[in-house]
Amino acid sequence: MKKAILISILTLMITNTAYNLEPGVRYGIETNQFFIQSGFGPGTELKIYVHDNAGKRLSVGMYYDNRMNSFGGFTSSFMKLFRNTERSGSLIMEPYAVYNFIYRKTIVSETTSSETFRIAAGKYKSMEHYIGLGLKTNFTRHIYLTTEIGYGLYLGSIMKPSAPDPVLNESYGTNGTGGLTKIGLGFII
Image 1 (cartoon, rainbow, N blue to C red):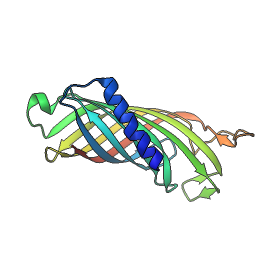
Image 2 (image 1 turned 90 degrees about the vertical axis):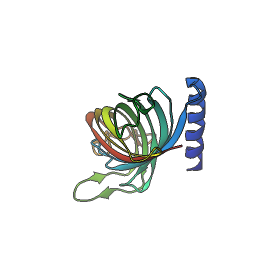
Image 3 (image 1 turned 135 degrees about the vertical axis):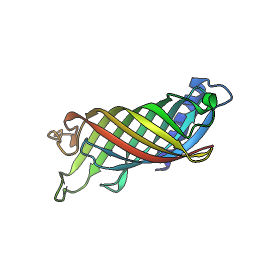
Image 4 (image 1 turned 120 degrees about the vertical axis):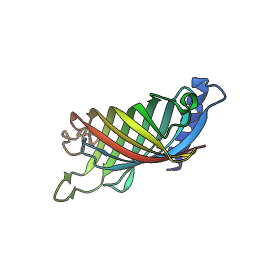
């Protein structure tokens, strides 16, 4: 867990240097609850981000798998506000376009099942790409609520796994498309 936090902070610092953003750069932290159709079920993400004056934001974070009750992988997203508070006054609601990337590596030690799902023991990997629209609702200058909806491609599914590799015991799953719904709370520094 400590490594994941350190990697996230380091990635954000390197990205900020590579972006070569002007002095008006702001940083923030955001937590989200999201629901996806790739079979992994609901998840929680905690991410840090850098936001520039032009309304562009790049974030990196960690994903917590609610179904498995464990750290599940990494997330990254790029957001572009359609209108920006810096240029258009103090907007209460700001629409935006977003790209979300989720990388998961889930290790299931024993077969788990319930009425709605059955997961065989083994390692599962998945990469998911979602494009969508969102709405940022500002409560104060530093606190906001976000909601997003999107659609995309997942490469790997825990609910429909392929046969595990005989040597590595890793299952890459099947590919498909599905939706993403996300709601979150953020704080701008």
